[in-house]
Length: 163
Image 1 (cartoon, rainbow, N blue to C red):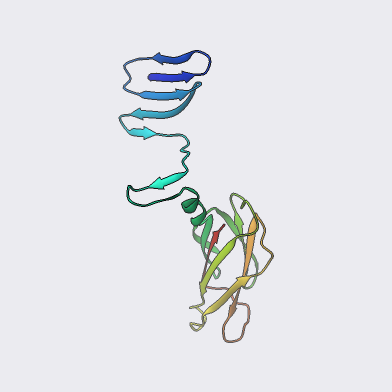
Image 2 (image 1 turned 90 degrees about the horizontal axis):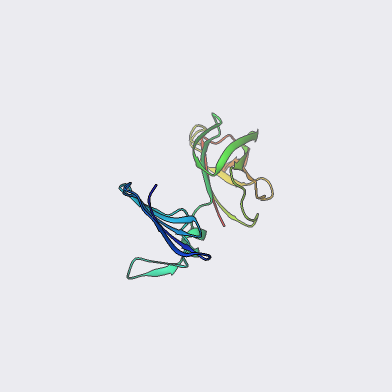
């Protein structure tokens, strides 16, 4: 239980109380804010502007400016070393990998930042480029050596996706 203030459109402001030390603010029975000894919980925060008191920006900027997915993958051992919103990496063939998104992108019109190295093959730097058309559920990359453009399994590849 909790001390509850509910702004109801049918009965007006409704208050209930107990001794739990928890305070809830509600709108038509839906909890919008909870305060307890652990801090404040806001289930969904909706805002149009974010400010630090001196500078402000539209709330859209940090949302659009954050990576929607990223992954660090070892193509030699076929191991995901770390990731966000990448459910798996499919080894298609030598030097060609498909990064599968956990949650689909809102559009296939996104930007990718790719990187890699091939230190295990004489220190040759690996070029990485998209290997398939962009889709909302996955993106493919291919790794080739700079010197011969031969397909190669890269020691590490990294990808970041931005919308």
